[in-house]
Amino acid sequence: MNAVPSLAAPTDSAASRYVLGIDTSCDDTGVGVVELLPSGGVQVRANRIWSQQVHARYGGVMPELASREHVERIDEIMGAALKEAGLSVEDIDAVAATSGPGLVGALLVGLMYGKGVAQALDVPFFAAHHLEGHIFAAASEEELRAPYLALVVSGGHTHLFDVPEEGKYVLVGATRDDAAGEAFDKIARLAGLGYPGGPAISEAARRGNPDAVPFKEPLQGQKGFEFSFSGLKTAALLAHKAGAKPEDLAASFERAAVRFLVKTTVRAAEASGRGTVVVSGGVAANRALRAAFAATDLHAVFPGAGLNTDNGAMIALAGAAALHTGRSSSTLDAGAEAYAPLARLLAESPAL
Image (cartoon, rainbow, N blue to C red; front, side, top):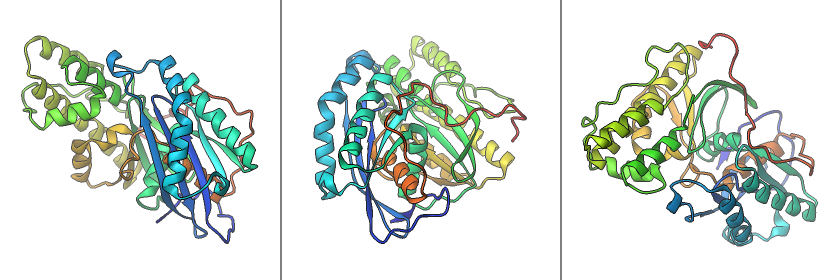
């Protein structure tokens, strides 16, 4: 049981409170329950996810199909989460649901469902930011104390934030093109390794030769901390056409992508003087990425098992932090946002 990152002076409470979290931002229907202890510690009581398989035939997420499946599954996943937590819906003290960024149709399913539950129970409702949820997922493992860096790497996001104080996020770098997870998906599809691409690439890479395809490092010599994966995709396509074995292509791409992510983050840490980095999002489950960060001087904090990919528990953790610190609840007219930046890129020097 670990302390929630503090955004302000905690409020007093003599008893545990239970926060329900809902995430339907893309193709996973996630519902989680977090227990917020009087001390401010948190314990994930349940984390249930329905991962949609309907998109595999298309090699990517089909928004309309995702929305429909969320509608069909959310009641079932909600019930399973409450059963796992050993609670009834009347035990819930607050509700948090992702409002953005994400697919608007998909977001609306969880957002409206969460509002309905909160209104029926007459408890606070928090419209949560998806990326903040990913960052708070690491609070399941240890207490987070600012300042630190946060690298969010998933199928839809590659963002590097500086967190100089609790609740404040400064975007210091983002991808110019594909997100890291998106690049994994596309190269896995190219090599015929399956979908989703992250686990497929990771598994194939264990059997491949990382020296087989000589990928060049992206954005060599940049002064800032941006990311780009378009060059790696082009190189992978050329290697595939030249007859590279799928497992060799996977191993070579994984090593190049991991080195790029870690090197850029380390440079940002050196420029900002940060010694800790939170690494979250689906790509954070990658074994090679975790090993590469472990080989640096940074203290890298990863979410617990099951909390890397999109899930409801991470949104419940963000809601628990809001509840614990007395943050104002959201109004029930809070809407879904496809593009909702957590922080904007610094206009000044990229060297922090």
